[in-house]
Length: 173
Image: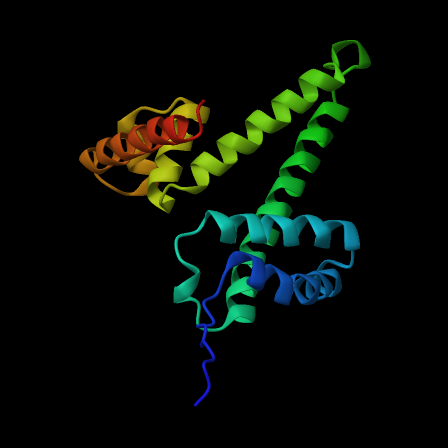
């Protein structure tokens, strides 16, 4: 009889990263057609995995990584679209009123945080919040636009306010 010790193959972050980082980067490079973006998305994917709860619940490692990577890609596309819209808006301003590069970067980061915060709201809550904040509509006007009751608008605004406050607390803003 042998005195060999059997070690269980418990999944660790290091083993997941070692086994799949190269594959994920190649997959992302084909999807994004950019090795630079693929590097960033792969790293962000593994950062999200590292911040997650339990690796032991993963059944199919490649599918798991693809799902997270797709979410990271969506975030990248949203950030890029937001940046493009911001830069197009700035291009319409006279040169004398252009903010400095530092201020532009700060404003863009703030817009991205606001976008991330608003993305966490349900559709109706987001619509009510934006109508109130951007168009300065009354709850009655919002209710008419959304075809809901004023009490529903009040609930949406309460949810939006709570969500915004929690977002600020969680992100140290």
